[in-house]
Image 1 (cartoon, rainbow over the protein chains, first blue to last red):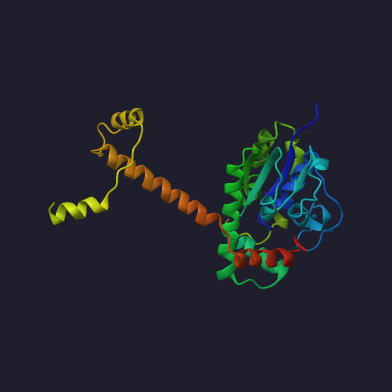
Image 2: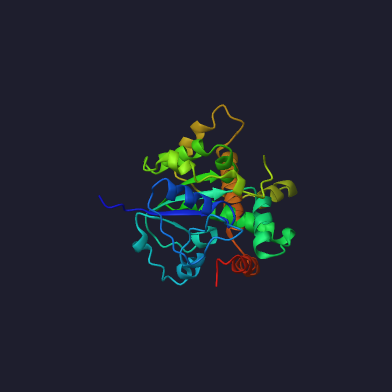
Length: 187
Length: 80
């Protein structure tokens, strides 16, 4: 039977969305990405994104072909959820300590005025999570980045349950390499 | 009318609610600290309005805020 859902990994940038895409890919779930943003020192295992991560622009102007990706996971970061057309979605929403996110953003994109930007991104996170709760065309699960690092199997089993048992959990767990995940403040 | 009564009168207004609803409320407040239907309805409406206002405030980004978020997303490579 044809899968009627669009699957999305979301969360603030640098919250572990690429890690979750890798987990799903290794676990055998259909995942859509291209080579537009190659791996680099910030994401050594790759970004697992479409169109260089810039599909938010396409969502904003209504030109992103969501139907083309039915049945597959794609990555749309938190701000992009604001422009999600009506549909039928299953979303994995990643959350991570905001200071770790700021640390990681700063490394990747230059100095951040934390007094200004930290509350803004916290607000964006609340906004996105409230949107997930409000929209009746969205089913979602929240996954904490640090929980995945600490106990990958337990968290991936939870994700697998959300996805109706379609993941190969043992293979998916192999995608989590704690050595690669820096900027961790909570141990 | 005494001054005290006039002042009291200016503080309140009357709102009509359906009798069956009033009966339901009457039953609900039995044995609680609410001593009248009015005090219960006032409490519920205040709570409701406060949560709606909080929600509205939370979700509204000023243009300036949104532009700052977009600037960071551009720097991270997530927006053109």
